[in-house]
Image (cartoon, rainbow, N blue to C red; front, side):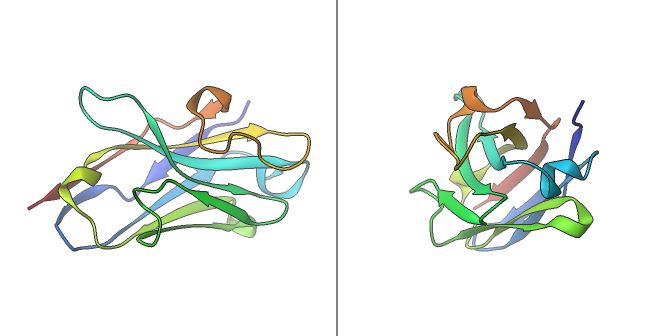
Length: 130
């Protein structure tokens, strides 16, 4: 069973930055097989949406249009940790942020599709004030 734990949420003013971290309970997510890891968010009264994902084997990334150029997803395989660097934050980025993982055959199909991911963390809150 894979356990994912997010860290790094908090409150920040518009224009500020935050870095989220997600640590996996097992190294295999980062070192064996093919896995996709992603960051997702859910604002109050809205559906959960994909923000960014990375295909662990190649490092290939995918971003939602709303965050491209402002957010950067990265991984540290040795630390079993996924990161989301968030810059130029805006009030509309306020949400609970979750990391998630899935095992894939090859490549990362539907990289930002919520329903495709198997393992989820408990979330970390990000609040951006204007």
